[in-house]
Image (cartoon, rainbow, N blue to C red):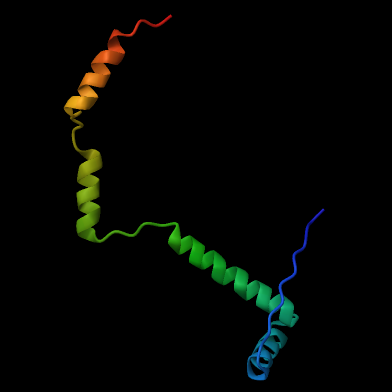
Length: 89
């Protein structure tokens, strides 16, 4: 079973006329047109926000960092050494 939530929207007459004409051209209701347009815009915005965009310089620096040789710092070396001494069952 699908749950529905209500969303009310007040428009001035000019905006309502614009949406009504656009919905008519699309062969849908105003509610359907607004729902579709809002959903499309939300998906576009959320898609853009979920991606990281780097400049060429930043990409090259990131790429060099992840592809470079790993060298543990002294604290990590100590932790790895201690972990190697732990007897496992």
